[in-house]
Image (cartoon, rainbow, N blue to C red; front, side):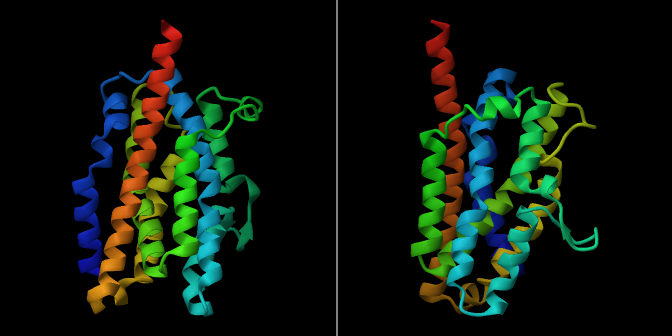
Length: 239
């Protein structure tokens, strides 16, 4: 498992999502608060959708042992809190915590009701569903796993940046502070499901590698496409 996670970390570093145009613009202040709001409004649709490909993958697993890690992850996505007498708390479902994050940025739930999902997010969501329904399960687990792995670092970067720039106070920060902590664990749970395939080598290992590279590709493209569309819209409206 340690060898696999080390390879995943190296692939994520080589892809450099945190160095792409989205995060570069956020880092050098080319991205205004309003532009960040626009990208995050779209990212909500990815957050809301993410559990659906996961559920589709779970349905393909023939045994309870193989479904278990996905069930735990899905439960947390929907607000399951083990420490609180093992109950579901609707306000802690990930789409709900992200709506609260948007509210701290000044985006109301009423305003979100008028926002339509853009093609960048549709493409990302459709790619994940296609992988989880149609590809070999080794590819699907690795694809979801590396997205969870990458999102832990992304959450830390975004959470720190919005606080540093004064867009959200440290006390008000929600969603990103939680995912900084839990997504590393979620990633490990996904990769635990494919570690035997990785160790077997051959086509099985190649499927795991393909899933990791695909997950990094679509996640990187999501952020880049969100920034490009937002920057283009901003330029168009400013002229």
